[in-house]
Image 1 (cartoon, rainbow, N blue to C red):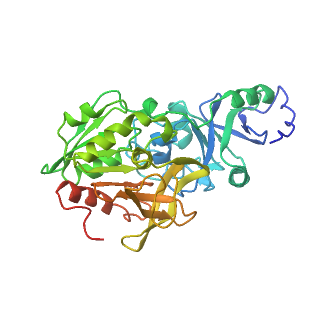
Image 2 (cartoon, rainbow, N blue to C red; image 1 turned 60 degrees about the horizontal axis):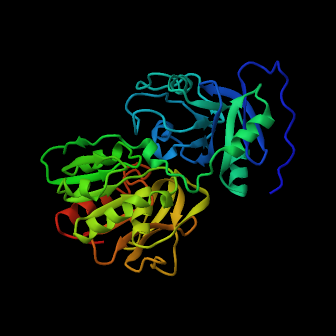
Length: 386
């Protein structure tokens, strides 16, 4: 790919607060600073959700990415202490068309800009997000940087090109907990679930807790012995950032636990890791699936779910419900946008996984039955009737 010539640098007296987004292919978008001042580098992706920007910001799966919101007005209901999926924003940077200056919500505690600034997140506003999204859809997700307007474009581009690409990156360890912790069951305890934290969103343990599960959350580096020492009724593998091929260490644990008959449930990165453990391959999507409006066909129920998705890699599919390289798995769900594998289950073992977020609420409750199915598996009843 030939890199087009860079636009000339702005003059030293560039207007205060000016900023620009520079992509690795040289495409430049000028705008105004939002949030913290400085330079942010990462993979540029876009999210099509109309609301939920604070959940997006705090989703650990977005580690290492500059997230562009396609909806033109962001921040209209401000930010609060409740709508978070982790302890702080995890995005590398944030890109919006317009940031609301006066949020309107009784729950709001501060504006979007103040929230980003207080958490050290570099952002940019007043850029043509429609043109940026169309460019990424055409050319694919790519590295980029947000920088103040006075930054030398040539030096910034060199930094972007030196930044690691997403393929081969293990980012899960950087967002995982460093020590185990327990989320108690809400009400009477029925099951004990061991959960790998590869970048888990707070909603997932909460959903399990609401179904009578005490959840012991383990660091991404935990092994089979750590899981079995808990004598769990089930194993949950969370979402997370990066390339699943770089997190091969967990494959042995998945196989050993499953072969003992302990139910296993994975979402997003967990779905990819389960599939790879049984022999499937994964690949990098051109621009990923990021948003709350992805239709997914459940082949068992013959129903369509509106799902929330956030992933840049997918499991390699095959003919009908087959998973190439993994004859013991079958496809249970398919993405109706591009036909990619959106869910699998094991033919004989109590293992299931989906390539989306059933704990999120785009449907708003289309996919929560999956947590019920996991509970049914732990009770010894299989996946339940379709």
